[in-house]
Image 1 (cartoon, protein in one colour):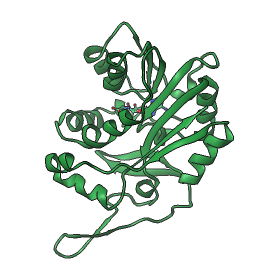
Image 2 (cartoon, helix red, strand yellow):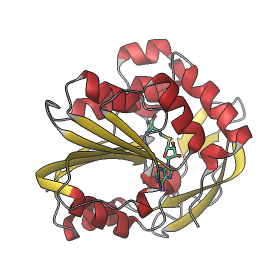
Image 3 (cartoon, helix red, strand yellow):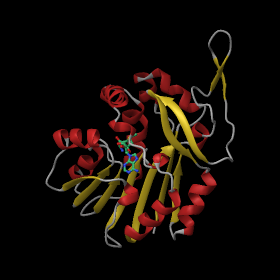
Image 4 (tube, protein in one colour):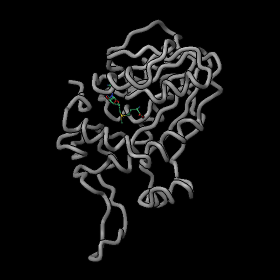
Amino acid sequence: MKQNIYDNPEFFHQYKALRQKTSNYNRLLEQPTMKSLLPPLLNLQILDIGCGMGEFAKYCIDHHAKHVTALDVSSNMLTIAQLENAHPQIDYQLQAIEDYEVAAHRFDCITSSLSLHYVKDFEAVIGQIARMLSPDGVFIFSVEHPIATSRKTMEDNWIYDTQGYRLHYAMDHYQEEGLRQQTWLVDGVVKYHRTIATMINTLIDHGLSIDKIVEPIPSKEAIQQLPSIEKELRRPSFLFIKAKK
Ligand SMILES: C[S@@+](CC[C@H](N)C(=O)[O-])C[C@H]1O[C@@H](n2cnc3c(N)ncnc32)[C@H](O)[C@@H]1O
């Protein structure tokens, strides 16, 4: 069964508060990296998977994309997207990517920010994505880094000394892929851990070639705005892969 944690009222309340902060990981690290990997958007047909509140879909239209199909499984997220980021060239659809059907070669660019670690059958979804991409199409996605999703007891992976100083980051069970249950905002959030090799080889097996891999580090300005983000210099939270058909 597909999880839809963003429609859990308590989770959503906390997530919304996190996203509304002027300094957060999305604004300072994830979104700038995603935008830096985009091709010129002029006239492109875009699919954004797990579009959330629609800021990125709106960004694409503001940067001259022709049309964005923006999918999300959460009606809470799409309600905000429709309120704050509606546009005649954006089609928001309440839809899990696993159930989305469309003609082959429909999109020039497919993006997904931090949604594919919620997908159980990565292989099937990458197959769909490869099919939906036009020849020379681009697929760019970010996920929580496998370093961060690997452990089975994921409360806080940092190991501290008695003064509370971060000694090092713990990683375990890396090779054991599959479901992880985590307390993040609420208990029982389900994510799927998979290795970097699995992700890359799945893309290759579906005829995509790897263009770039990014493990983003924060800028000096980002660290000034949000000092806690400095720990990204010690281990990455996010993994980006850009692939081409
Ligand atoms: C961390 S949020 C990111 C939202 C948005 N991409 C952004 O960066 O602001 C992950 C989003 O993925 C959506 N999602 C999770 N599983 C999904 C699925 N199987 N199909 C479509 N959307 C999904 C969630 O509902 C949520 O809106």
